[in-house]
Image (cartoon, rainbow, N blue to C red; front, side, top):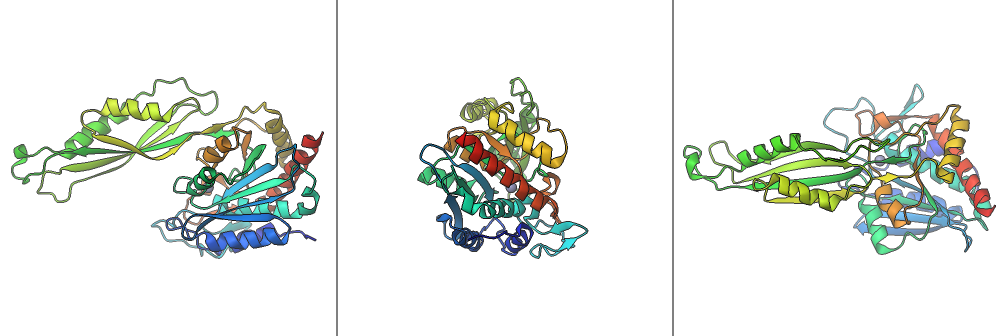
Length: 379
Ligand SMILES: [Zn+2]
C-alpha cells in the first residue's frame, strides 16, 4: 500500500542532509531515499564508490520483453561559496513561493519529484516495463558515482532516460561534453636576481595561455548546441617572487559538441602547445549527449510537457553537463531528456532557490511520462 508522497516536504528533508561535495558524505541521504522506496515495494541496491559516498538504484516492475524507464539525479551539491548567504542553506525555508537552500535547484527537488512520482505509481508498476531510479553521489566532481556503477555493471537495462537536472520543467534534448585538462610547464629554478641562469616555467605557461586564446577547433557548429568552447580557468606557478619558477600549471575547460573525439582533441592540443607544455592530462572527460528531438519518445515527452506547461516546446539544450554523459552510453545510447523542476540560472548560486510550484508540476509531468511509457511500450 502506498500513498501520495509530498515532494515539497521531501525536497526540504533532502536539503537538511549536508552533501556538499567535496567531501560529499551522501550515504545518509541515500539511505533516507532508499528507506522510502523500499517501503513502497522497490528493490533497492546501494553502491558506494568510496567510504560514505553512496549511490543507489531502485527498481520496481519489469517485463522480460520491455525495458524500464530510467530517472536519474544526483544528491551531492556544490559548496556554499565564499559569499555569505542571507538564507539558511540547509533549512529549505519558503519565502514568496521560493524554497531556499543548497541543492534546492541542483538538484534535490528533481530527485524528490521523481521519487515521489515513482512511489505514487508504485502499485501500478508491476507487470509493466517498470522504472529504474539511478540516484547518484559525486556528480558535481565529474560523475564519479555514475561512472562507478557503470563500471561495476550494476545499472541493468533502461529504454530511455529522464535526467531531472534543473530546466524549469522545460524539456532539453542534450548538452555539450566536458574535457578538463591540466597542462604543466617546467623550467629550471634560479635566484630571482639572476634569471638568465634559470628557465622560467611561467613564461612558458603564459605563451601557452596566449596560444589557447587563439585556438581554433576547426569544426562545423552543431545545429542546436552551437560551437565548442575553450576557457583557461586557472593558472598557477611560482612559490616566491625572488625565484625563477620551475613549474606552472594551466587549467583548461573545453566544452565539446557531438562527433568530437576527446582523445584526438587532447592530442591535437598537446601538439599545438608543444614545446612549452610538457604534459596535458584530462581530469574530467565526459562526452555530451544529444537525442534527435524527432525521436518518437522525445516527441511524446515534449508533447506531455507542452500540454502541462501550456506552451509550445522548442528544441533547447542545457548549458551544463549531467550524469547522462555516463548513463546514456552505458544504457546503449538510449533517448535521453533533461527535465527537472529547478531553475537553471540558480544552480551553484549563493541563496540558491527553486520555485515551490515547480516541484508538484514535475511530479505530475513524471507521472504522465511513466504512464506513457507503460502504455506505449505495451501497445
Ligand atoms: Zn546538477
